[in-house]
Amino acid sequence: MLKTSRQTSNKHLTRFKVPQLAYITFDQYTTLTGERMDLKLSYKSFGLPLGSAPVVLVNHSLTGNADVTGENGWWSELIGDGKVIDTQQYTIIAFNFPGNGVDNDVIEHYDHLVLRDVANLFKEALDHLGVDRLYAAIGGSIGGALIWEMGASFPDLIENLIPIACDWKTSDWVLANTLLQDRILHNSKNPLYDARIHAMMCYRTPESFKTRFGRSVHEEKGVFNIDSWLLYHGEKLNNRFLLQAYKLMNHLLRTIDITEARGSFEEVASQIKGSVHLISIDTDLFFTDAENRETYKKLMEKKANLHYHTISSIHGHDAFLIEYDQLKTMLSPLFTNIQTQS
Image (tube, rainbow, N blue to C red; front, side, top):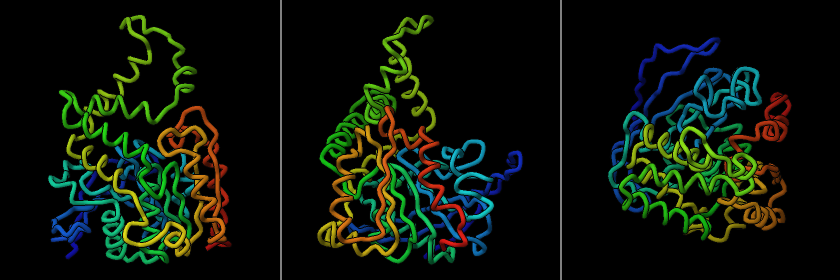
């Protein structure tokens, strides 16, 4: 059973009203592992009212949230009034992953969920909102992997799938890193702090660190600037995120696999009706460009509406949060002149 509620908000931005955080509750949702859980899904909508414009779904990454635009929006460079994804042309919906800690919402038995459950929950929520078709779904990292899951589970739902810096599966490399993250989260005296420090080394590159820090020293602190930067990010996440939420998100990273109980990748992905726009990062150490190129080669003979783009950057995985000019160039053809494309 689905129920909807809204949280009031009095916050306003210049020319931009902060949308209310709304909720959809799932009573006794049955997970793919066979467990029954009461779950809550929160979301925000931006731009034009539902039912009046094409709908774009934006999925957040590991420690992100539904604040995709506005003053504190993590993708405000791409989404907003007059931006590439224009809130004057589209309705934008952004769900929080269930249990990601927003409003202290966490899931005790998080290991009962897999990423495909999240895809199913998002689809049920879209149905509840009266959305039976998405013009586009876009997201980076685990948010992009979720787009793969949604496309595989609901082949007719999305007209344009835009998975960025991600994969349709959890590679051995990501499995190894999430295992280490899990060990840190369960054994460290400062689990969030230490896990974030390790994660930041997966999200950047040696060249990025060298270019930015060059073995320079923070004079006041008397430490290398790279040390200061990593410690800052550890403390920042520790102050804003919940340990149980991080454990959940790290666990979900381990469960990416659109082929589970379905068949080969080519068989599953070729059933997706919408256009797939793969966006990779040439220096990504987490979801590597080589893995994405292999995906493209496997699928190109089975699917005509398949496109490949590469972000060139020294910054690695986090480039999808840094290299906005390149992203704008790649995305503009999809999100302009909507009347001729939809």
